[in-house]
Figure 1 (cartoon, rainbow, N blue to C red):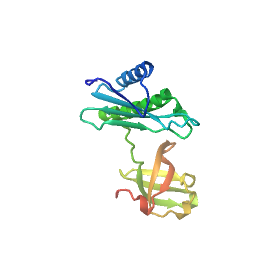
Figure 2 (cartoon, rainbow, N blue to C red):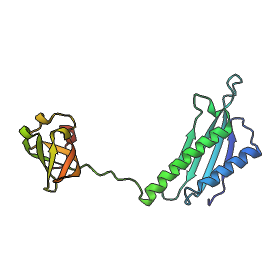
Figure 3 (cartoon, helix red, strand yellow):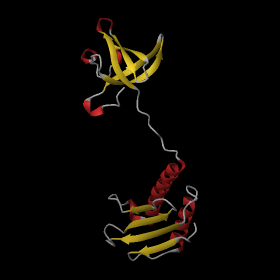
Figure 4 (spheres, one colour):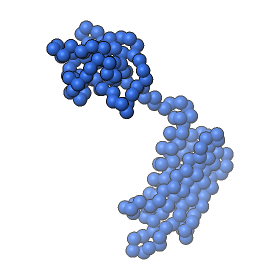
Length: 192
């Protein structure tokens, strides 16, 4: 970090050497997930002071990264009172910060999963008496499918020209669709 770690204790919470050491260790671990951190501010807030239920702690983290959105974590005490312990509250907040930093790094490095659209095509012809049909794929290839591959089980409702998406596999006699989904009006795919 370019700027030294900033710590603040609020809500009547007394700072202790043990809490300081824990926060410093957790902040140092963050640099394992991103070497671009320029500053980190941690605020530990004592809450409620209700003697019957115990103090609940809130943690705020603000992590600055150059050229990107800052990572901000604001952990409020959960209803199950796990945050009656300030160390548990700190652990949860720093775990959330680590996950956000990992996501930032993945996006920065371009390692975000890209989900490809399933192949699609149109019903070219149906042979109901033999329980199969042919799909003309977007690339012009003809794909065989059996009646049982239609996901809704409504093979008889299909007609030539219907748009479908499918999962292609290699069959004994060439490519075939293992599953076929009819595309409805709300799922229109680009024209073939």
